[in-house]
Length: 255
Ligand code: NAP
Image (cartoon, rainbow, N blue to C red; front, side, top):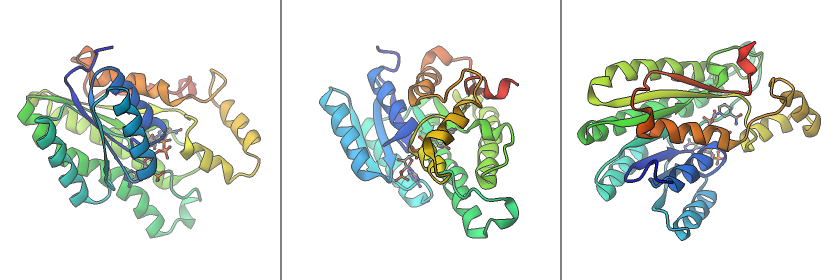
C-alpha cells in the first residue's frame, strides 16, 4: 500500500497501455504522479480518476521528442513537488514494419526521435534534480526486442537495443549519486500499440492467437505484469538493483 509513499514520479506515455498501469499502481502505492503524454483526453481522464480516488496526480502535455517541452515540464514538476525521485521512460512507438532495405530515413528517424532521443531528454533533465535530491530510480522501458531479433520493425529493434545499453552506461555514471538505472524488457503485452500492429495483418483474432503461442506461458502479458515490476524498481526494496535488465515475457526469450 505505501511502498512508494513520499516519492514523486514521472511516467512518460502514462495516459494509456503499460504507462497507464504503471501510473495507477505507483499512485496506489503512495507516489505523487506526473503523467507526460500526447494523448491528452486519455491522460486528463486518468489524472481526474486517480485524483478523485485521493491520489496526487497531474497530467502534462509533453511530446518526449521535443527537448524544450521535456525540460519545461520536468522543471515544473520539481518546482511543484520540491523533488523528483522516479522517472519511468515508457513513451514509445512501434514504427514502420518493413524490411530494412525498404525503410525511409524519415521512418527510421521518427522511431529514434521518440524511443531513443525522447529517453535521452528525460534522463538529461531529470538526473540533475535526482542528484540534488540525493538519489532516484530511473526505469527505461525497453523490450525483448532490445535483446533478441525478430524479422520485423528494424528501427524499433535498434531503438530498444539502444535503451538497454544506455541503461547500463547511466547506471555506472550515476551510481555514486545514488541514482539507480534499470531496464525492463516486456514480451508482448496487450495494449493499443500491439492491437495496432496486429490489425494491419487483417484477421486480428488469428494474429493474436499466433502471438500468444510465441510465449511459453501460452498468452501475451497484460500491462499490470509490467507495472508491478516498475513499482518494485521504483521502491527502496530495489535499493541494491542497478544496471539490471528485468525480462518479463512469459518465457519468450528463455528458449
Ligand atoms: P501504447 O498503448 O501505444 O501507449 C503509449 C503511450 O505513449 C500512448 O499514450 C501514446 O500516445 C504515448 N506517446 C506516443 N508518442 C509519444 C511522444 N512522442 N511523447 C509522449 N507520449 C507519447 O504503448 P504500450 O504498448 O503501452 O507501450 C509502452 C512502452 O512499452 C513503449 O515504449 C513500448 O515500446 C514498450 N513495449 C511494449 C510492448 C507491448 O507488447 N505492448 C512490449 C515491449 C515493450 P498516442 O497513443 O497518442 O500515440
